Image 1 (tube, rainbow, N blue to C red):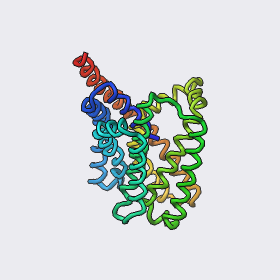
Image 2: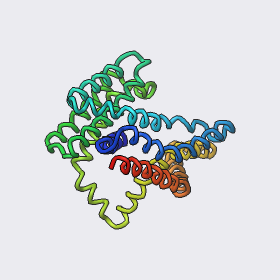
Image 3: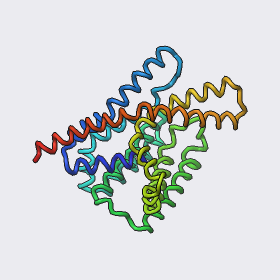
Image 4: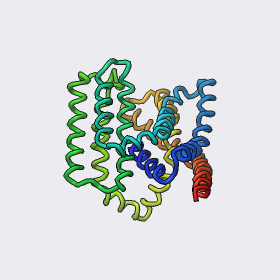
Length: 276
């Protein structure tokens, strides 16, 4: 969903500005919050206090790569969105069921499919497909995901999670289709007192939440192991600590996103002014 939304927003942006200014603007929005987090991760790595705090940064690098390539994606989409999606989907299948060294690329390809779908939707004016198409997409997506797990992956889920490219693409398509089917109901939530402002607040803090949830989870696991809890209480305890520490980080460090967003808007204003 995040890659679909990102592809949609970048697709809209490069429709009005050149891709270079779009990339610079996105980079500025990421640089400050991510830079602070990287400094924290370096300290944690050197001290060994909270291990494994950099493994989720792949999202930031992948986002920037897709943004940099969006100019090429737009040319391909305008040439033929159907052929572009078919070729990308075939690549995901081929990489996922191919040699083990390529499976990680299959997973990344699943995210690329979502990004391309977002750009295609933006190019088509964000018009909703028919209800029949969305229902069919949801059903086919779930069926293909189950088939990928059962037939292609030989039930080897726990030992080889990187094989799930086809399954991720299928479930991602199904999830997006369901979201579009429930668009009116989801839009209604934004108008509800209490819920709407909270959702908008979370939207402004998505990067902070994403960056800091991992160390919060690691700390929760460390504390749970120290307490020697049974499996179910252990999981509940880890979830509680994760939510609590992520909330603290969001409130404390979230304003960095506002400053980064303001810097990004300055880039957009400068480009718009020079173009006019």
